[in-house]
Image 1: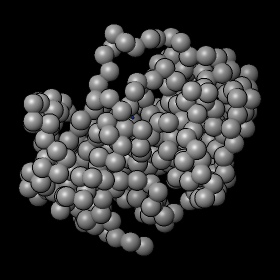
Image 2 (image 1 turned 90 degrees about the horizontal axis):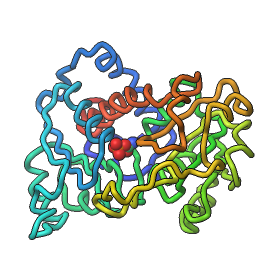
Image 3 (image 1 turned 60 degrees about the horizontal axis):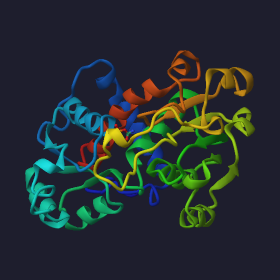
Image 4 (image 1 turned 180 degrees about the horizontal axis):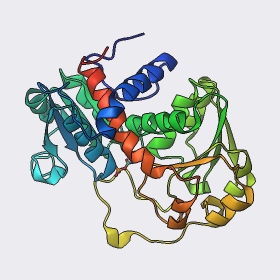
Length: 318
Ligand code: CP
C-alpha cells in the first residue's frame, strides 16, 4: 500500500480499496479521543492552515476540531475577501500557497473553482487536502460517509445506495469514484436539469461502477440500504457566495424528497439516511426522529475522519 505520509488528498479517483480500509482503521484508533473529549498530543508540533474561499460550517470546523483533538495548532481564513486573494489584487493560488506552505504543515482548502486544490498542490511543499472544489469533488465528506456506512451497517460491500439530488454535486462525483472500489450498486435520482455529466458517466463506466438512472425516489427506495441525499434547491457551487435573497425555499418536487411517510410506506426497515448538509425541504426535519437518520453521527465521524487523514498525511500514523 502507498504511504499516506506527505500525500495530497485531492480526489477519490486515485484511492484504492485497501487505502479506504487503512483510513478507517486510523479512524477507529483515534475515535476514543474524540468520543471521550480527551485530546491527544500526536500532532503537537504541527500546524494546520485552513484556506476556505467558499462558505462552510461542517468541513472547516470539523477539520479544525480534528487538529485541536490531535493537539496541533490551527490558523487560516474562512473569508477570502479579507485576504489579498479576495480583494483588489486577486492574488493567485500559486502566490497564496507559496506563503501558506511556510505558515503550516498541512493545508485544507475549499474553493469555488474546480481543480483549485490540485493547482495549490502543484506549488505546495506540504500536503493539500481538498475540502470541496466547485462542482469537482469532496473527498473528506465521502470518506466520512463511507466510514459512517461501515460503522452503522457493519460493511460496505453488497449494499445498494440510492443517491438523490443534484448529480453535478461534488459529493456525488466522489461517491461515484469510490463505488468502483467496492461491491456497491448506485441508483441515481435527479431532476433533468441536474443530470450527471456525460464525462462523469463515462468515467464511472470505465471504472465498472454499477449505476442506474431512476425517475423518482418512490421507484427505488424499497431496494436502498443507504439513502444518500443532496438538495435539488441548490446553490451555484462555482460562485464564492450566493446572496441568500436569491434563494428560493420549499420547492423540492416530490420525486426528490424523502419524507417520514415514504419511509414508513416503502423503505427497508434497516436502511439509513446520510445527508452531507445543509438541507432544504428535500429531507423534512421530522425524519430526524426516525430510526433511519444518521446525519448527526456523521458530524461526529467527520471529526474522526479528518483526525485520521491529518495524522496520516503528516506521517504521525503509518
Ligand atoms: N458537508 C459540507 O460540505 O458542509 P459544509 O458546506 O457546511 O462544509
